[in-house]
Length: 80
Image (cartoon, rainbow, N blue to C red; front, top):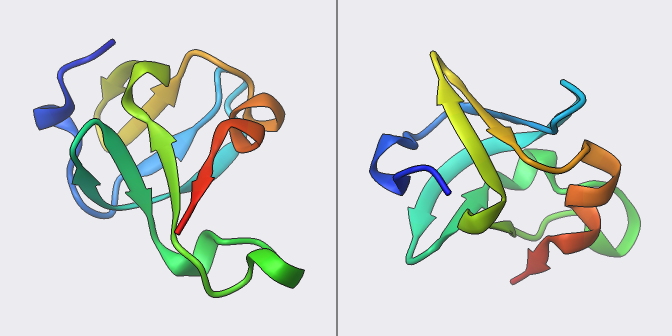
């Protein structure tokens, strides 16, 4: 896991496959809180989603790359 202090607001979160997962709102504890605009559709729309910090593979430039593909990472998101 990468140091969460390197994760900053407005960074793009991408899966290991390079596919967009979301945009960082902020870090809360050991999780990345994603912005509501990337919350999806239907019942997910308008909610913040969280990605566990242990999924971070690296922070490169303005991107947070996860160790899981985007399709897998979104199944690990928690909702608030």
